[in-house]
Length: 602
Ligand code: C2E
Ligand code: MG
Ligand code: MG
Image 1 (cartoon, rainbow, N blue to C red):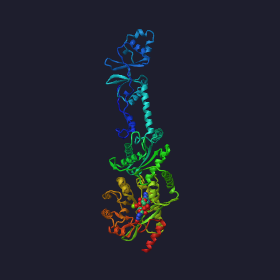
Image 2: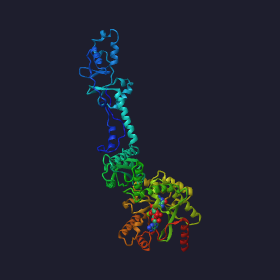
Image 3: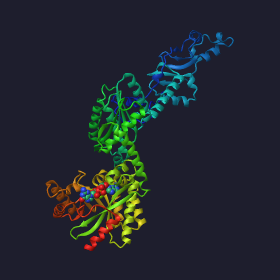
Image 4: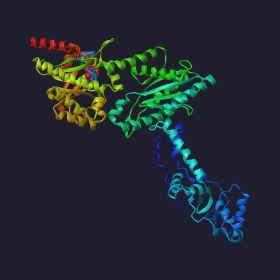
């Protein structure tokens, strides 16, 4: 009986098997097919023509022999004889006289399981189950090219299967299933060992916290399978930066840690961190698309900063957060002032969570003016937070935190609702209708039900969708053009307007604009700044205006502060303007006063 030899059906981790890193080995070996060869035992076979009495003597001489294979003249197995059956026959009265001259072939068991040496352990286990488990005790005859090579016992089979199961369970419990690197549990264990070893050897080691920058954004804009593949590649990249004895682990999400062991000097940790930053920055190909990613790294040293597992983790994490706050894409070694920083951030997040319920969020409004008619044609709603201790906070202080911790969707929906509510209030107060521009975060825009949610809010407040304009950024639009067009079309179908914010900063070609159903381009304030003196700004603004006009898309320049900037922008045929030149963003009641004053002045 020869069985098929398909291997164990286990997930193959997409890492380079040629890499010398341990985690790859663990997973890779598991997928190597384990065959009967592994549990093979050689037992001298008994030729079929041997007489029964001689066979009995073999069993009497070798007390540990429980079963023996029987082979024919070509050394092919034909049956089994077991000690029990033989002794049973020969203990009966007159049995010796009756049988001793017979050859063993006449009394052997004729249905042994014969398997090829390349049969997998899994298949062998299946054969045993299908054959009713009897062979678990008898064992299996193993052949190579049909010739006898040995026996495999059920006992060894069971041992092997149990051992493999244990390994599998160990891997499941200790390794991250996506990337194949150690998980939090194994990491903590390794970190503890590192502490003990460093104590004995008196050599320092470093713990590095690694967090991908803007991973949430990538995941939400380019999809989860893209994000998964990115994490796999990223784990591989990190591993390539360190020695085999070091540990790279994934704590969850986009959080990784590295233990750099046996440093001859603590400063070496900084060199490794710098190399990591460099390697991480190299362009990466994922699912046929090139992406550039960066990461923020925090380093804590044993024993300089802490000599406990939890202390080191907390301090490396604190250092990493400071890097994030300072603008990401870099590394910092822990220093005592960071500790304070971390607990401050945690408090900040808790406060932000409560900000909506406590009604601490507010919208400020900045007018948009058509300079050809001198009319106020629109208004941009800009988020503010009246922080209980820090006072009035600008979005730059808290939007990215809200994005990092997933609060942006709730906050973003609040912004849309509040803008609609305000518009209804102004309408009821008899003010002429104004187009209201609302900023949307990429994470919010990528929600499956985004357009449906917007529609619900608009209907709830009964505002005219033609007076709602959503501002998206260039990078956000370009990240996933197909999905963007589809969501934009749903929004446009109900009458909502779409503008591209901060235009010109996304480094993408102007020609793609025609693909999207846009109503307005907002020329970024960096091109407006001092435009009358900066030649490059002049050229760019001219180009943007020309393209906008040729595609029939409206234009607005933001951030106009001075008379000279205003004149120059107007001379380039961009007539809608927003900026401090007219007024800074104002709270709702002040904006209304400002508006009434403008009307009065005609
Ligand atoms: P943005 O959408 O490009 O908004 C324009 C920013 O430029 C505002 O900053 C505004 O106060 C400022 N600004 C306007 N005119 C001038 C000027 O003449 N000179 C200068 N120097 N600045 C001017 P703000 O309010 O701090 O908002 C910053 C960014 O925060 C916004 O940039 C927008 O991207 C984001 N943001 C604001 N509100 C929200 C919101 O409700 N949701 C989301 N997701 N993002 C928001
Ligand atoms: Mg805006
Ligand atoms: Mg802008």
